[in-house]
Length: 445
Ligand SMILES: *[C@@H]1O[C@H](CO)[C@@H](O)[C@H](O)[C@H]1NC(C)=O
Ligand SMILES: *[C@@H]1O[C@H](CO)[C@@H](O)[C@H](O)[C@H]1NC(C)=O
Ligand SMILES: *[C@@H]1O[C@H](CO)[C@@H](O)[C@H](O)[C@H]1NC(C)=O
Ligand SMILES: *[C@@H]1O[C@H](CO)[C@@H](O)[C@H](O)[C@H]1NC(C)=O
Image 1 (tube, helix red, strand yellow):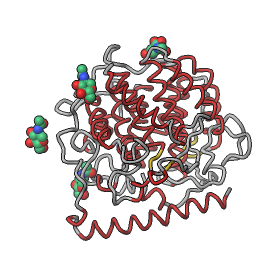
Image 2 (tube, rainbow, N blue to C red):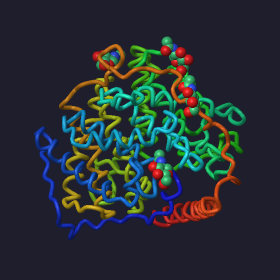
Image 3 (cartoon, protein in one colour):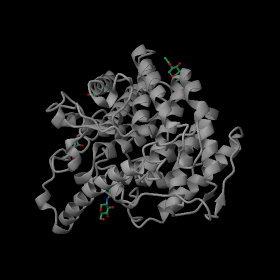
Image 4 (cartoon, rainbow, N blue to C red):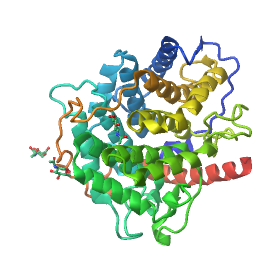
C-alpha cells in the first residue's frame, strides 16, 4: 500500500464549481439513501471504466490494493440495495486478480505488502458472508479468503518481537523493517471472520494469537490507543503514532466477530468498547477539513490539514461499514456507533454537494459518501453476515492457495531491466514521498 500512495499529490478538495450531479439525502428515508448510494456507485464505476489500465480487470491506476477495497464496498452495495448492475464487473476483477487462489498475482507480488493482499481477502470473505453470486468454474469466495489466510500465516515472523506480521513481505522492500497495525489487524480480522463463517477453531486460534501478540506491542495498547507501526529493530517497543480510522476499525471488527464466535467472551467486549471509546478522537469537536464540528467522522491525522493522500481518503469507508456490520452481530454496540455514523452521512452529503467524474475531488467525495451510506443501509437491512450454519453457501477449501511457488523470494536480478529500474525509482520515490508526507503533516498541523 505504498508506492503511488505517498507519491500522489496530496489532495485538496475544492467543492465549489463542481456542478455535475447534486445528491440529496434524507437519512430516514430508505429510498433516498439507496438512491444516493446508487449515484455514488455509478460515478465510481465511471471512474473505474475510464482508467488507463482498463484492459486489466481489477487493476486501478497506480494502486493495486484499492481495487480490492473498492470491490468490497461494491459487494456490500449489492447486498444492501439489491442493485446487481455492477456484479459482472466486480466478478471479472476479483477473479482476474486471484493469483493462485490467494490474491497474490505475480505481476505485483514482488512489491506488495501484507496489508495490500489482505484487503482482497477481506473483499472475498465479505462476498462469502453476503452470499455474493459466484461463477461456476471459479474458486469460491470463501476459498479465496482461505487462500489469503494460508499464504499469510507462514509469514508470521518470530525472528523479532516474538511474532507479528511485517508490513511488507520481501527483505528488499523498505517496509519490511516495520510491523504495522493494518497488516496485523487485517489478518486478525480475516481470521476472526473465517472462524465465524466456518466454525473452524484453527482460525479462531490465529485470531486470538494475533490480538494477544498485538497487545504486547504499541500496536494495541492497554489504553486502547493503537500505534500505526513499530519496528523489529526495537523489538517492537518504538512506535509511529499517527492515528487512522481503519487501524481501529480492523481491530474492532475482528473483536466483534470473535465476541460472537465465542458466544460472548468478555475479553472481546472489553476490546470492542475500549477501542470504540478511543475512536472518539475521530469525531473531533475542533476544526475538521470542511469546518464541520462534532459527530462527524474525520481522519484527524490528515483531514484537518487537507493533506489526505489517495489511500487515506478511503479509510473512513472501511471504518463506517465495518462498524455498521458489527451492530448486526453484536447488537449492544448499536447505540455506541450508529448515531455518529448517521450524522456523518448527512454531513458527507451536505459538504460534498457536487460530484464530478474523474476529478480528484470527485474521488474523495465518492469514498467519503460510500462507507457512510452503506453503514446506514446496514441498519435498514438488519441482516447479519451469513455463516456456513446460517445459510452461507460458499464452499470451504482449507488448503486453498497452498499450491503455489509464491513463497519463494523473488529473484530480482531475473527481472528485466525495465522493471528493475522501475522498482528502484519507486523505492526512491517512496522514501522521498514518506519524508515529505511526514514533514508536511507535522508542519501543516
Ligand atoms: C499482468 O500483466 C499483463 C501484461 O500487462 C496483463 O496482460 C495481465 O492482465 C496482468 N495480470 C493481472 C492479474 O493483472
Ligand atoms: C451473533 O450474531 C447473531 C446474528 O448472526 C445474533 O443472533 C447473536 O445474538 C449473536 N451472538 C452474540 C453472542 O452476540
Ligand atoms: C480447519 O482449518 C485448518 C487450517 O486451514 C485446516 O488445516 C483444517 O483442515 C480445517 N478443518 C476443517 C474441518 O475444515
Ligand atoms: C498445482 O499447480 C500446478 C501448476 O499450476 C498444477 O499443474 C497442479 O495440478 C496443481 N496441483 C493441485 C493438487 O491442484
